[in-house]
Length: 65
Image (cartoon, rainbow, N blue to C red; front, side):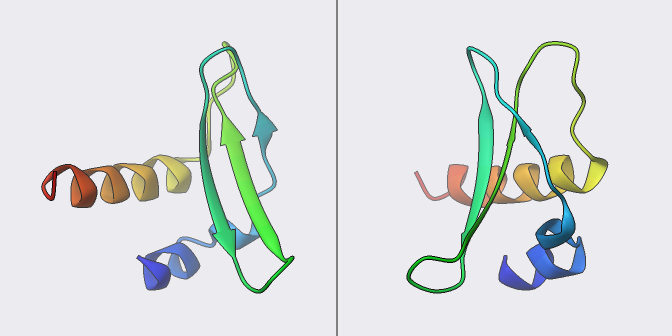
């Protein structure tokens, strides 16, 4: 997952569009260095790479439950 995060260049995406119901991906690279991508506001569409990564992550955890 860490490799996919970097290959999809999520660390370069700046998005903060929360709604009443929202999604986020958060990446920690140290004690205080956090990169967070947030989406869910009606009418906004996240970058395709965000959707790809989120779906990969979701599927990998869903099969473990």
